[in-house]
Length: 193
Image (cartoon, rainbow, N blue to C red):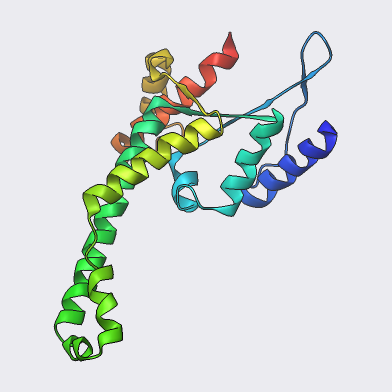
């Protein structure tokens, strides 16, 4: 049964991320250990945070204890920040649409059935933010995400990578890669013990 799940997981990673290796880890009782998957903010954003079919499919593997999902506290904070910034973009878009409808589209106000447009565009974005941050908490809890504390990151390793321009660092945008570097370092630490 587990072989089928690992085959599905391997196929999923190969199609979505170009990674096809899945290792079966056995404990001393010859039971299969769950496959540990660290997710980055970009995966959540690409999957519209909670709606993406591929993300949901991956998360469903946690129900059978086939996969353990992990993020670092840096990713967690970045997710909250990205939700807020995406809400701001939606707010700006909605405002432009509302201005257009009230400007050149004001003729539509004469059709009673279209008045719903004006109420739909009146969105409480603070409430949207509260609801989406709550949904993030519920999503992480539902799929038993473990949030790894980044204080276990190896700061020396991060700075060696920085000065050697080793991934995730690259020419030009090094300072923007520090969160990823600490996340990678923190993600490795539990497996080095």
